[in-house]
Image (cartoon, rainbow, N blue to C red; front, side, top):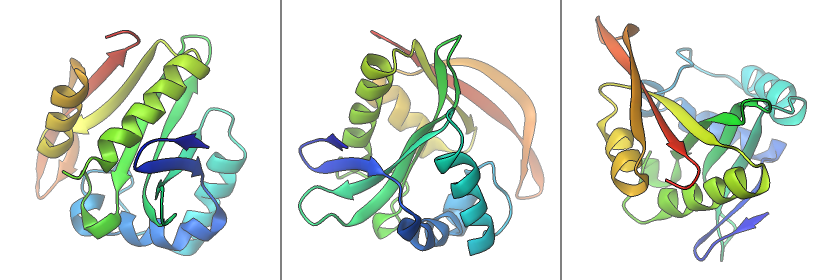
Amino acid sequence: MLIGEKVILRALDEKDLPKLMQWRNIPDFKRNFREYRELNMTMQKKWYDNYVVSDRNTIMFAICNKETKELLGCCGLCYINWIQRNADLSLYIGYKNLYIDDEGIAKEACHLLFDYGFNELNLHKVWTELYEYDNKKIEFYTKEFGFNRDGVLRDNHYMDGKWWNSYIYSLIVGE
């Protein structure tokens, strides 16, 4: 368990799956995720069993209110490459359907996650793929943490009847 001032990051539990599925199916959330399908509990449970429980290259956390223990969101490190020491960042705040909040939940969760990734797992880099219309996360990662845009995957994502670029952003340990 990773403990902050307002939030804790704890291991995801199977009991979290219905709430996570509900949040991931919010249309304004779903458009920013790689998973394009409406999720059901069978799919959510398969993801949990195959990745969260069984894949050593995926470490996911429930973001919870430190006082009430209420589930607020989800974050983690995916596609961990133990040789190259990098991982893909996953994060969203489902609480109040915020996605990325102004209350400091996402910021503190990221601080805890980055400290864990860089100092406990000895990662060199955390990266993420964001669609060009996902201004909320682009602004959050660049302004709050100094993520750099490393590259553009042109016309990589189809949404709302048009093609969008994907941007690869990263944060290197010590930046």
